[in-house]
Amino acid sequence: MNQARPLAILGGTFDPIHHGHLRAAWEAAEALDAEVRMVPARTPPHRPAPVADASGRVALLRAALAGQDRLTIDTRELDRDGPSYTVDTLASLRADIGPDRPLVLLVGADAFVGLASWHRWRQLFEFAHVGVLTRPGVSHAPSGELADFTAGRRAERVHGPAGSVVDIAITPLDIAATAIREAFAAGHEPRFLLPSACFEDEALLAPYRALRG
Ligand code: ATP
Image (cartoon, rainbow, N blue to C red; front, side):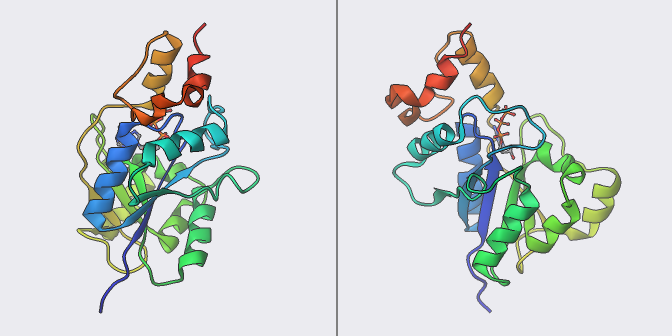
């Protein structure tokens, strides 16, 4: 039977979007033959407030994604009040796409090892597969409860709507939004770590330039 094209999501603060996110999303799209949606977070439960507000981060995403249609933006977390728990996002996506289409939650290897601290984490696997993106310098052997829970769920490829853990090897790009914000704060111009389109409109990166003391 022909399985529907998977839908994958990459959530994040995207403060700001950079080539690490974009390559990871793109390579996952190709590896899974999936549609990938970037899902910007409004109120990340475990993190300090982002430098750019939601509309600013979305504007940067739009600029970054211009000219292709394989990666898109899904703003459902911005449209919801309160903290954006991934499990709620997956439930909402599952309601949209129906029970059969494969849904894949993409997470960096660093995020994956901490998955057991996420809200209702076991339920993530009822709604989606988890695609683990290899990130430079980070081993992603899970431990404890997560290791026990995922041991029997490892799969080579996505099959069926949800429930497995699939590794997705991506080109290691050691780029982090933190380092980009630090570069702006130091008065540098971190070109080529994020798309040049983000630099074309002066207003897009203004919140980061304002970090300069
Ligand atoms: P910060 O430095 O602010 O923590 P970040 O660059 O890690 O930010 P996030 O918005 O937290 O970006 O990341 C969103 C998702 O993208 C996470 O799953 C994260 O693991 C992944 N990711 C971030 N940077 C990379 C990268 N260079 N390569 C692959 N995946 C990445």
